[in-house]
Each structure stands twice: as structure tokens, then as C-alpha cells.
Length: 337
Image (cartoon, rainbow, N blue to C red; front, side, top):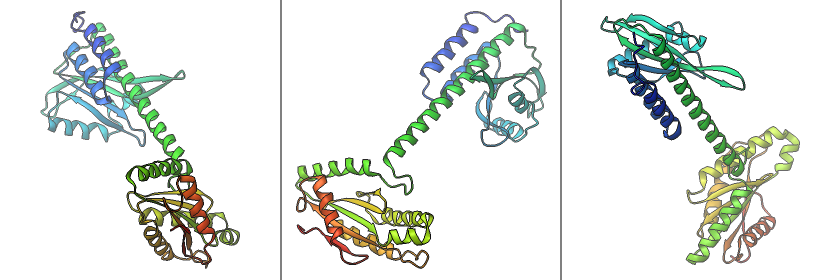
């Protein structure tokens, strides 16, 4: 029987470890390790494992083991995670564990296991997230005091899993919102907001270093006619194909953005704007026609400081050059170049 757990080496130790794990652990693995190691020491269990229900398919995945050799971990993983009928999996799914389950270890020795479902509550609805299993070699009877402690340890582990999953989800959402705020949803390129910030930074750097920065505006030839003839889906596909060529042909130091409709803007540090624009036009010329209409773009290029002293003046000069282009699939440079 294990009802003789001391207050100093049992519940208080587990409580202290659990509080530290939830408050200060950097990641889920560390938090679970702290909680499970303290719990195993308190109940005298040499072996333990934490398994979580998979979110994408039936079954459980092994998150943590304690006291197992590598070959024992492999055997345990193969026995439990791929078997939806295993008692450990059932404890996670049914949210009802077993405190004195007996079985055999790989070496044939008897093992006594306590399978504790990990359950959290959200909005008044309980949800199983996994199972915590403690194992003793030989026969072991879980008493009332030990059972209370085991349930508390399981609650700490469940809280840790829920907390770190919530934090991870929040981080993913924040990253998604950040990406959405700075990218064009159709093409995945930068949007006008990102372009404006980067262009201001590049112009400021060019001023400090007495260097150049080029701005090129690209406009898809005949895009209005394409949409009218083939519909918006074809138009969206052309935009994605043009964006893919732009992303492939520009340099790593360049920034390409979709700023609206069929207009794209390139910010190219240095004086290579025309060279990069030529590569873009050649790449787009190799695209297959859509509904019999060839895909091509025209470009207008301006350079700092020759064509404008600030970001707005540069964009205006490039736009004027683009408007003055008389041929399809051509590049027109600002008059100051």
C-alpha cells in the first residue's frame, strides 16, 4: 500500500514542481518532465509515460517517457500508439483510467500500471487530451492517498498540455495575422503597406551611402480584355503566374509587391532595376497563353536620385515612364535616367 506518502516528499514536492513547470518552463517537454519526474518520485514509480491524443487521426502519440531504455521505448511505442484497442488508448478516449492494471514487460516481468486520463475543461465542456501512465515492476496496489496524488499529477500534466497548446495556437494566429497584414492574399507577394515601408528604408539607406535604388512598375498587358473574355478565375491565374515569375527572377536583396489590380512594383537596391526588369519580361514571355491570349507585361523604371528625391517621387516617375510606354512587353525608363 502507498498511503504512507509523507507530506514533505510527496504532495508538497509535486505541487511545487507543478507550479514551477506551469509558471516558468520554456516548452511543453520541459514542463511535463518536471511534473512527471516529481510525481514518479512521490509515488515510487520507476517508469512513466505521457501520451497525447492525435488531432489529425485516431490514436495517441508518445510525448514523454521516464525510466525506459531505448529498446523499451520502441517496444512501448509500437505496442500502444498503433493500437486503438490498447487500454492506454481507451483511457485517453473514454476519459476513464485504471489504477491497478497488470501486464507483462518485454522481459516477461509483471508490470502494474495506473492509467490516468488527461482531461481539461473549456467552456464547461470536458475534453480528453491524452493519458499519463505510471508503472511499477511487480504487483503494486494503489491506495486512496496515492490515488489522490496521482489524479493531481494528471491534472497538472493536462493543464500543462492545454496551456502550451493554447500558447502555440496563439503564436500561430499572431504569425498568420502578421503575414496577412503584410502580404497580398492572392499572390503571396508583399502588399502596398510592406512596399511603402521597405522603399522608405531603401531610399534612406541610398541617401546615407550615396548609392542608388531602382523602382520598377509592371503592368499586365491586356488584362482588362482577358478578364472580360475569360472571367476572373483566368485573370487570377494569370496574376499568380506573373507573381511566380517575379518572385523567381528578382534578386534576394530585391522586394516585389502587388499594389493593386494587375500592377506590381519592384524595389531594387543599386542601379540594376532595368536588368532585373528585363529578366522578368523574358520569364513572363515564356508563360503559356491563356485562352489564346499571350501573357506579357510592360514596365516603367525610375532610379534614385536621378528621377526622384524620395519614395513618392520615385514611384511617380516610374508610373509616368510606364504610362509613356508605347509597346507591349517593353521597358520604359524615366526621363531623368
